[in-house]
Image 1 (cartoon, one colour):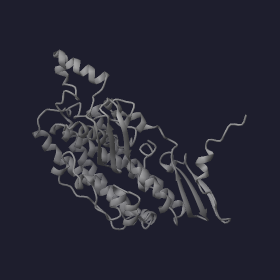
Image 2 (tube, one colour):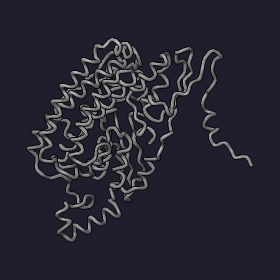
Image 3 (cartoon, helix red, strand yellow):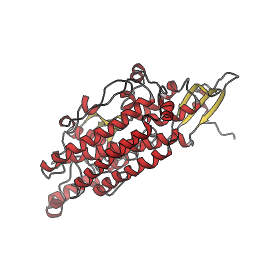
Image 4 (cartoon, one colour):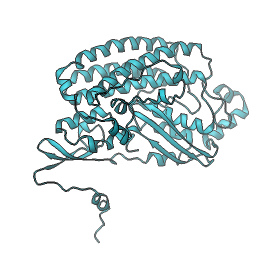
Length: 408
């Protein structure tokens, strides 16, 4: 008996018709410059792209459905695997959404440590983006230099939580650990090195005629197009729209911090590159402001909410009721009030949002994650048309998409 073709209805919706003088090319899903499992069906007329069809789903893991079958604390380490280049931003966004659902706030010291990790993670994400983007365009030295500084930043994160890439360094209600005694001094030394090295990056790239020829007027995203496709982060600010959730809808302690939101009116890949460079300076500025704030804060690291948050370890080891409560929370999970929340944060790639619906059980009734890379991948359908084939590689790298958060 002949087996039915289960993929046929899916491919029937895609228009593969082409003119006789054009050529169809599959870019990915295993192409090294696809930055993940991206498949682009390109219709080329010579070297020019006349039609583009981005296709996803080659890395799909059903992460939102997994969230609905895990207790709330159990799902937190899974969020690391979305934007795995900036794991802390995923942890923090999820923790903040559940805290809003529970009606609790993390202690001030915990919020300061969280913000330090977030901005340090933003730097590592931007360094990774610059390294791989420059390598795609042909600047191999930049890959080596950026990864060198990224290693120092990852060493700092490892000193704090023991992990380098997928951190799970945030908890619902606060953070699990205080900073090591030498961490502030080491971070300050790293920032001094970083700011010196970023100037060298700019010296190598910013006025480099080959770099400018490859990026200027390539991948124009007009303000109207950016809004229409739901762009956020650097892709939106590169179109001249000054929108950063840390400023426009402050969360945590960002309303107490002094930093600028860089924008570009050129709307091209070169403008987005310059924003990325400036954002690393701003993250360094934020980290330097957080250091004296940390020293003035009290020592509490987790919120006091016995129905939802386990007591400190000292109490668990000495008080019978705290031990019983901890056992119930670990084995059965917390039971948030019935309701729904949406919390958006500014991840290194744009707006990362968590929509959580609770029915009062230890499992989320519904979980929906709004990942910025998803919108930016959809944009490829329009933005690649009219570009040369070589520019496709440039633009995919420039948009900074990660497929862990697309194929959730």
